[in-house]
Amino acid sequence: MSVKKLEALKNNCEREFNPKETMQWVNINPLWRMTWGARNFTTFENKALFFNVSGHNHKGIVLITLSWDDTYKVTLLSTQWNVKEVIENVYCDDLAELIDIKVERIKEYVK
Image 1 (cartoon, rainbow, N blue to C red):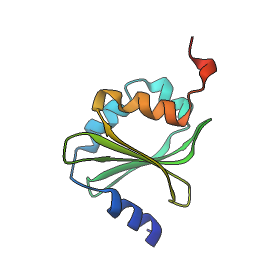
Image 2 (image 1 turned 120 degrees about the vertical axis):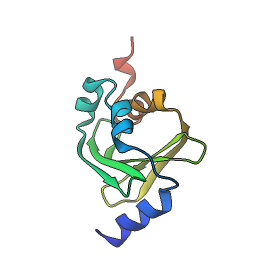
Image 3 (image 1 turned 90 degrees about the vertical axis):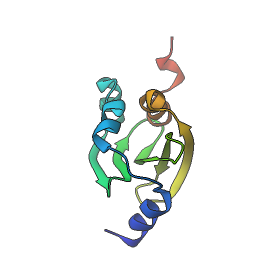
Image 4 (image 1 turned 45 degrees about the vertical axis):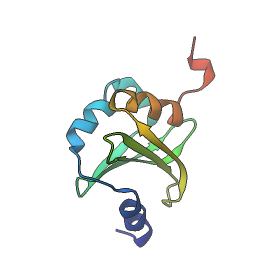
């Protein structure tokens, strides 16, 4: 694991969580996940879930961590692990839609 990748993971992790449960929220709409081009789902010490995406709005990495207040933090990273955007206080039932908005959704998709 590269130093930059390890540094990004350790700097964003707060507490342990169940990645399988988080994946259920990410997969709430399987079509969204397909449109993101999501692949290479990986966990880090049960404190982070990250995967590569190739969407319309973001191409790179989506990093999901759990904060001490039981909300998720979603960090969008470049393929070189540079932080592009951080979204905090994301509730579990908003997780997939937020990722869809940030990674793929454009106004033409909305009726």
